[in-house]
Image 1 (tube, rainbow over the protein chains, first blue to last red):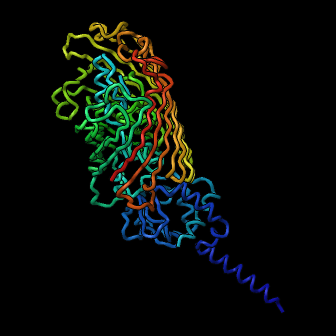
Image 2 (cartoon, rainbow over the protein chains, first blue to last red; image 1 turned 90 degrees about the vertical axis):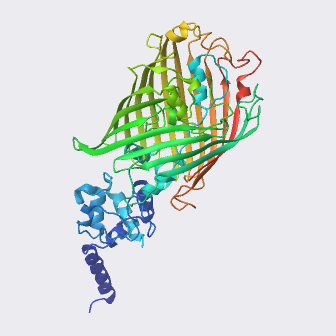
Image 3 (cartoon, one colour; image 1 turned 120 degrees about the vertical axis):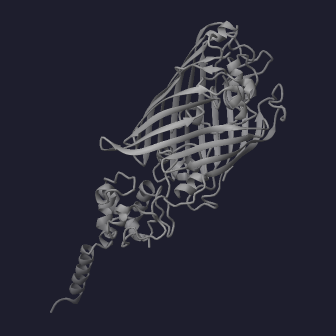
Length: 132
Length: 452
């Protein structure tokens, strides 16, 4: 008879893996450091984005961005390119977008060249995942 | 020429007196109208959450013609500003600096300004300031910079091409190293901010000229600009509030202003280095056959900003300007002993801001030039224009951040500034022949500076 503890561990591992494949934020949370991500946000993003709910600056609020459909905040003026992108912001899409915004959304209006450092992106996405 | 912060009526050369008069109003700008337009807090564009020292984001906003916005309609491009303070000098001044002030310990309302500032159309923006000078009790057109900016791709890189129409060489510059926007960013209207000799690009043409320049900013790094200026007629100077009595004369048709700079914005830090110049001639009597005074200013500058998470922000900036003068008009009128002189200005300053709120700044200024007993006569020792000293400042900016009270409608800076001289107008002691020492001009300035 199988050890029930091993079965539970395997189930948890499968759930985690499947959720990760589904594009939710758990992989980023597992690998990223939220505190370091907050620093990356302050360095790279905070001039244009607020972590506060309902606070749009030049860019839309980053609160709840993970899992949000692109161009879905009603009181922010998005580019046509972003409106037509069909993106839902999961960890993978965010990672690609933060790496090179114009490659993911050509014609978008975010004036940002991208963040090359993969660990910083992971930390940043972990922080964004915490904004809810 | 005089420091823009100085009011001591000591010089005899006509242009120097003009600059004294033109420079009564300290430069001072931090505009909530921009914050309302962009949705950003003041701290996004300004070091220490108050103008005018620009972050790289602020540099891009200015180069973009003040037009960047959050896309929402209905922004009104208007702001207002108030600057006032208390000024104490090391020793009483010989005479009250103005008709409405005392020889020492003056409480003053230095500036009450209204601004048209921000986006006018998609590609057209403005920064136009009108100021009531509470010390002189007069109103005049202050800094004005109207811009057209067009964003495009050049060689696969983001590029901004623009045109600036303005009334002061250097007011359009996006970096805080040239005199117009350099440290200190405000100063005592009835104290001493520097000696009585200054280069032409250091306020010599301020608000009495109109010019246009074309500029390009390529790949968020390379900035180039070329422009020219013409003197406003005495009647127009009267209309703008400068007064026709202090008209400096006519500028030569070959007047050229130019700028070349490189900026590296790494977001956690930024670096800038460049060169700039102003070349012109002034015909004081405005007669085509009259003699001219020629000025050739050449400057180099550099600055560094550590921005990090914006919790700890440190900056360093420096500039050096060398001016060569060939003064045919001054020589002909007996106001100069030599036709050719040179004048050099050096500035170095550093600042640290904690939490975009608490700031400490320190600066060194040095002006050195060739002696001329007629050009630098009354109020100067040995015909020397040399002045040097230090500026120390501590300030508190409680608002201007994302969660601040009143954002984005109000901002405030309270500060204490101390300017001390180790040499003034050519000497450490008795520079004016009446026993006044350089240290007698040491100036304590307590100020409150707010904008809406």
